Image (cartoon, rainbow, N blue to C red; front, side, top):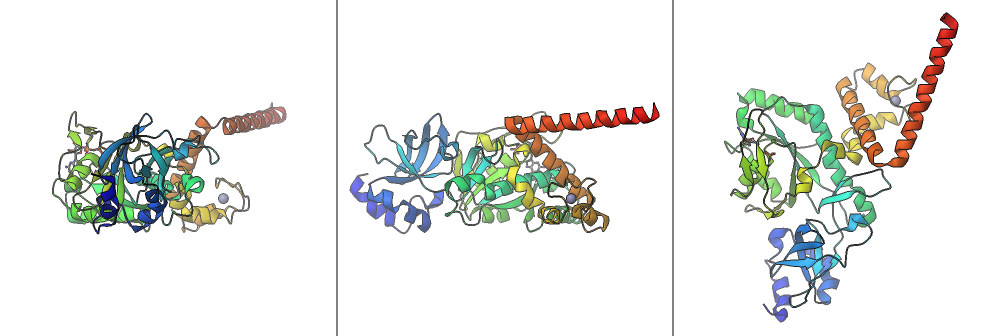
Length: 387
Ligand code: GDP
Ligand code: ZN
């Protein structure tokens, strides 16, 4: 297609990138680049400095060298909207990265240092939890924290804070609902999860019976979604149900514990027939609960709120005097289970951070040494007294 036909194509009512999420706001963001004769496109895949960009004229391969900066948060990522060289340029470069609305970041370290961007411009984070096994509410809380870290992603502070509006919306999908023997039990399970995740929609679904798939498809139609969840949760099966074709390879091998095995095709950005886009990258698949990072506070908002009233600013809510959190547990206002989950998650986060952050690691070690020394001194004092 000749370059002169571009303006007409881009302003036609059904823009060829519309199925990929192109809208009036992206068009406005892109305007200065359009003036330079660049093409808009959405990144479908990235590997070793090159990426596949879906443009109005099809998918092109482009070099990301121009936008690859020192800041790893700005490395071109699946889901990004970019400005790319028009046809005829050789090699083709991605010239600019449009400001991200949301970014799913694996926080590798503490607040100050960089994370790894796994996917961008996500509207819905779908947390898949299998009903084949007993519900682990703590695990759901942790996945929620992970989902929330997408909406609050620190990357946005570095990158596009002003263009970011509401962040990604979490949704919990209880998969394999067909394995629950009756509707009453199912409704209790849904309620349990709803209590754990106030304000977060919870949906029971089954790829086997088709239950809930239409609702999920309707949600997904409203933007870009990612599926999160443990291996075997049924993500590939759900993706296939949404896609209406077997793009994901679900292999039920050694299916002794409700876990299947999957291999994913190389397409990472998938247009859904009912509208919307699904992003599925190896990075997202590998995302672990330990990546929860900044979302913890949001999932445990009531605990964070109570903490503000604790006497000590660094209160660990274990046995401190004047602890508002413990007082709330005592009065029955806060379920003990919530506090346990919170502590567990905080502890895990601290360990993960410690793993990657040398400074914090040194601090922790000093802390343990001090505690050890105190313990020893106390023991010696005791011995002195009693021995
Ligand atoms: P993933 O690892 O999260 O992508 O999970 P898969 O989609 O590979 O599914 C894991 C296993 O669960 C496979 O054996 C699937 O056949 C099975 N499974 C997925 N969805 C359903 C469902 O709705 N009902 C039932 N009974 N099994 C399902
Ligand atoms: Zn406290």
